[in-house]
Image (cartoon, rainbow, N blue to C red; front, side, top):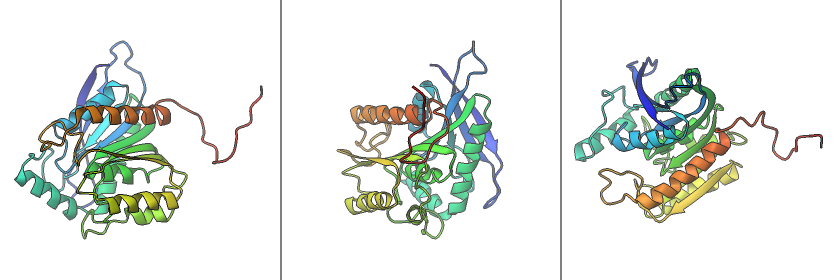
Amino acid sequence: MLVSKTLHDLPTKLDNGRPMRVYVIAPVLPDYPQAKFPGVVCFSEIYQVTGPVERFAGQIASHGYVVACPSSYHEFAGPEPLSYDTEGTDKGNDYKIQKTIAAFDEDATLAIDLLVSHPNCNGRIAATGMCLGGHLAFRATFDPRVLSSVCFFGTDIHSATLGKGKQDDTLARVRKGELTDNGELVMIFGKQDTHVPRAGRDLIRSTMEDANVTFSWLEVQAQHAFIRDESSKGRWDAALTRSMFTFLMEVFERTVGRDLGPRIASGKVAEHVC
C-alpha cells in the first residue's frame, strides 16, 4: 500500500508553548478517499524523527495504519532530527531530562487527539516507539484510548529517571493499577542491552505482573538499538528486526486492526444464541 506524509504543527500549553511538529504518514487509496484506518503513535528515540524512525513508521502505515510521529523536543529545538554523533547524542540525552513529564504526556495526548480527528482514522489507536520512544509508548498506554503498545527497549523505565528532576512516575502508576484492565503491552528488549540491564528488566516485568497488566515479554539476543538501520554502531540486526516487526503487526491487527465491539470484563463470557 502506498503512503503519503503530511506535517502538522500543533500548539502546546506547557513549558514555553512552542508548537510540536507531528509527521503523519498515512495509506493512500486514490479510489477510496474516505477509507478509514486504525491509528498508531510512533515515538522516536532521543534524536527525534530520523530517517530510521520515518522508515519504521512508513512500514506500519503501508500495512494500513495512519501513523503520527511527534517531534519530542519542540521546547528546545526545531523539528529537524539530531545527528547520530556525540553532539547529537549529548543534546538528546540533555533534552530528555530538561523536559517535564507533564510535557511528554501532553505531547502524547495531542498526537492521539490528532489521530482521532484525522479524516482517515477510525479512532482505534495503538502506540509504539524505540529507546526514549519505547518509554513514551509505555506511558501512552495510560490513556484509555490506546488499546495496545509495542515498546522497543524502553529506557529509564526501570530507573524512573525520565524528565526534569529525573523522577518519573511510570512504574509507580503501574503499581497503582493504572494499566490493570487497560491496553495490551508488548515489551521487547535485547539481552545485551547495557541501557536496561537484567535487574532493570526484571523490575519492569515483575511490577507489571504484580499489577496484573496484560502484556507479552520478549528478550532477544541483541543489543540496544538493534532495529535502527542507520548509524547503529554495528548493532542493527535486520533479520531479528523483521521478526519483531511481524510480532508488532500481529498485535496491532488483533487489537486495533478490526472493530471487536465492546470489551467485557475479564472472566466473563458473552451470551450468544446458537
